[in-house]
Structures are given as structure tokens and as C-alpha cells.
Image 1: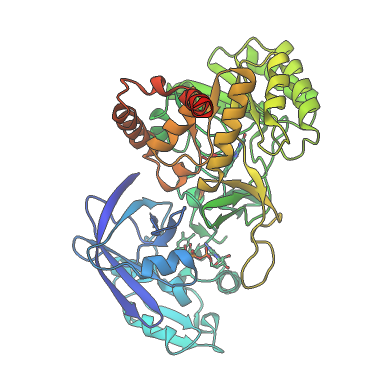
Image 2: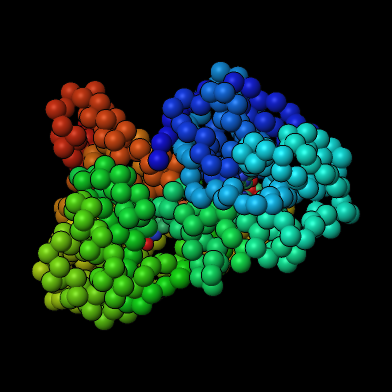
Length: 219
Length: 286
Ligand SMILES: Cc1cc2nc3c(=O)[nH]c(=O)nc-3n(C[C@H](O)[C@H](O)[C@H](O)COP(=O)(O)OP(=O)(O)OC[C@H]3O[C@@H](n4cnc5c(N)ncnc54)[C@H](O)[C@@H]3O)c2cc1C
Ligand SMILES: Cc1cc2nc3c(=O)[nH]c(=O)nc-3n(C[C@H](O)[C@H](O)[C@H](O)COP(=O)(O)O)c2cc1C
Ligand code: FES
């Protein structure tokens, strides 16, 4: 577990989202689906973010500014620094035969890095609006749908689904692809097993998502 | 000594962080296993956070058979935090821990929100625990009592060896959009920087009331914060919420603490012990 102060290389708009690029320092990018805890300037707690891309010597995060912490992260400017801890948690298992990447909204965040490790894998992405759908440019081979069309309508049978998105989407994906690997979210204070704040029901028991997940096998 | 605050570190998941402390304090252990509350269990507030973990823990049986041997292997001295819902719960757990030489001390979490009348129940719990174990006993008190110094005196009379100050204070956060509680169970315990002045006041009051050894905690983020707790009358300090943002906080705060003491011309931060009380005396008399 490493934590380091990294400096911002760029903060770029992608539709309503922001791609925060930081110099990597000595941190490892980790496996797709793993996450980092990012210091949110002015806030008490850091915020969990999936690694979106690992350009040379950088780490990049796709951030949806929905509250004080994410807005502070999106407002960072080139040259400013922030503490970053990670990589944390368990990522996707990429040893699958017929991968299909499924993402909804900001849930597409881990998919660009995942796609790099699964070259040629198809993706289906769902968004709330055309503006949000601009983020689809980050994911190769993607078929995009905008509400009211839902991604679950685009999932063919017999695929090894790797999905990230809002909870209702993951529940729906689980129904059509019972063996899918799903990346879940929970409010997290620490990201490394210290607070027991991120408990979710796993195998009928409340367990720490930051330790057991965030990627869980649906079955 | 630098410790963690109970419930703010899992030594088995993050052994390196535990090893950077002088002693590790476990999450509160209760008689029976507890899954804890349904999510959401944490929410950030303006200068702190709320938690409603609900004392999730394996229960004393599994703690003894599974956790204790693993904690022993870590090689860090550790304290066990003990909780319960009636006096006997505390006494039972204390007597079962008493045989385990590896447990350096017991912290009685008598600041559980379920405990109604703090003075009487804290006294009874301490007295019963005192009969059940020879280990050093620390009473963890809540700042919500009308007079925490009075609770501390009662705990001292009942045989406690030191005080841990303070536990969280009850708070509520509403989701700005829905105006419903942000936490699953509704309310939670407030920790972090917002707690610091309240914690300092509790440390100072209990120091004046008892002169006992105190572990000070509540919103410590920097070495200077830690020095203030020592000045208010804490011999030791514990880190809670700061560990969530910064697992390297123990080493950092130790360094900052030495630097802050040196700035006052002290060789050791021990020289700061209770100086706040001398200071206020001279201010009042001049
Ligand atoms: C493992 C993991 C990876 C994540 N990866 C990304 C990512 O790559 N990009 C990204 O933009 N976001 C990601 N998130 C979500 C992000 O961490 C939260 O949006 C952020 O913490 C919100 O902070 P805030 O201060 O902006 O808003 P807050 O004020 O904390 O929250 C605003 C609203 O969102 C809700 N909320 C907050 N956190 C969560 C959560 N974790 N799950 C569900 N609802 C929540 C709150 O209840 C509130 O209604 C991830 C979360 C996890 C657990
Ligand atoms: C997530 C969380 C869990 C906690 N669990 C316990 C617990 O099990 N037993 C206990 O005595 N105190 C518990 N506490 C209280 C802390 O030990 C400490 O008293 C309090 O957080 C104040 O310190 P801080 O501001 O540095 O966090 C918990 C606090 C937090 C934030
Ligand atoms: S986020 Fe703290 S235990 Fe998972």
C-alpha cells in the first residue's frame, strides 16, 4: 500500500465529466477495476476513484462532479498536488474467453484501462444524454445507447460480462448475465479496510467492499 | 505513546500501519458477533465525519480463537476494547482476556450510545471489570455527560487505571437533495477535526478532576494537535479519523510532534504535559 503526493498534469473536460491526469510518481497503476483514494482538497476524507487510464508515467481518473469532493478534484489545476493512495482492492479478472465490457454513466471510468488489457473486446455503454455519451470516445469498440434504451437490452448471450455502473444497472446486468463480474460502489472513508464503513452484503453477510471488492463475481 | 483510536484501524488488514504505532487498540469486542448496521454507515460532514458502524465485530469467542493469535504474531503490543450492553458483559469478557498475557491493557468502551445513565453505569462497569482482571484498565468516556470530570472521578474510585478521551458525539446529516438522513440508521457518531475543542475540554476537565493518565483523542490531524492534547493533560494520544485519509499519519505526526516540542525549547514532548493548566493559573493570577 503506497501513498504519494502527485502533481496534476492536466484536467480535461469529457462531456460533463473531467479527466484528471496526474504524474504517476512511484505508484503502480494496478489491475483494471482497482481504485485509488484521492485527497479531495479542503475535505476531511479522500475519495475513491477507479483508474481510468494509465498513460506513460501518468495515472488518469474520470470524475463526475456530483458533490463537494468530486467538484474539488475537478477544479484542480496543472501543477497543483494531491495525495494519492493505491492501487487498492480487487480488480477484474481478465482471463476470460469472450469478454464484453458493460458500462453505465460514470461507471465507464474503469473501462478504458480494462479495454487496453483486453484488446479488441466489444463494449456496450449506456448514458443519460448525448452530452454524457461524449465519454464513450474513451472506450474502443463501443456500442452506445442513450436512455430510454438500456445497456441490458444490448447484451448478447454467452458473453463474459465485466460491468461497472449504478446499482440498478448492475442488478439488471446480473439478471441477464448471472456470471458477470460487477464493480460495485459504497461510500468509503479509508479504502484499505480500516473503517468498516463500506460494508455491503456479500454472500449473505455484510463485508468490506474495499477489501473483498470492488469487483465481485455476481454468481 | 501513540495509539490508534478504537475502530479506526484493522491491524490484520493493515499490519504496517499498526506497526507504526506504539500500541494497537482493537475495535470494540462484544459478547456476541455483530454484523453492524445496514449501509450507509459513513458520511462526511463539513469538518468531520459521521459513522454508524454499529460495533461490527466477531464477538469474544471468535476474537479469542481467531484474531488474538494473529494479533500476537504481529509483534505490536495491543489493547482490547471491550463493549457490552450490561455490566456482566464487560466482566465476562475481561475475565476471559485476563489469562492472555499478550493483551497489554483493556479499554472499557463505556461510551456506547446504548448506555443510558453514564455516571452510575460507568462506575458499575469499572468496578465489575476491576474484579475480573488484573490488567491495566482504561475507561473510554463520552463527552456527552453533563460533567465528564465527575464521571472520571467515579471511574477512578471504582478502580480504573486511566482514561481514554473522547468517544464520538451523536450527530445527524441530511442528504441535501432528499432531506432524509444520509446514514442508514439515521444518526451517527461525529469524529474528526470538529471534535477537537470538545475533546481538549474533556481532557483538561478530567485531568483536573483526577490527575490520572489519559489517552487523548478527537480530531488529531497534526503533531501540533497532539501537542495540544498533551498540554491539556494527556500522557498519550490516539489517532482516529486522520488514519482514513492518511495511513502514514503515525510517522508524520511523531515527526511533527518532536518538531513542535523543539519549537517550544523542549527536548521531549513529555515536557509539554499539562502545561495548559499552569498557564491558565498564571493568566488568572496576573
Ligand atoms: C471503488 C469506487 C470507485 C469509484 N470510482 C469513481 C470514478 O472513477 N469516477 C467517479 O466520478 N466516481 C467514482 N466513484 C464514486 C465517487 O467516489 C463518489 O462520487 C464521491 O466520493 C462523491 O464525493 P462528493 O464529495 O463529490 O459527493 P458526496 O457529497 O459525498 O455525494 C454526493 C451524492 O452521492 C452519493 N454518494 C457518495 N458516494 C457514493 C458512493 N460511493 N456510492 C453511491 N453513492 C454515493 C451521496 O449519498 C450523495 O447523494 C467510485 C466509488 C467507489 C467506491
Ligand atoms: C468509523 C469509526 C468507528 C469507531 N469505532 C469505535 C469502536 O468500536 N469503539 C470505540 O470505543 N470507539 C470507536 N470509534 C471512536 C474513535 O475511537 C474515537 O474515539 C473518535 O473517532 C474520536 O477520534 P478522531 O476524531 O481522531 O476520530 C470509532 C470512530 C470511527 C470514526
Ligand atoms: S472504506 Fe474503510 S473499510 Fe472499506
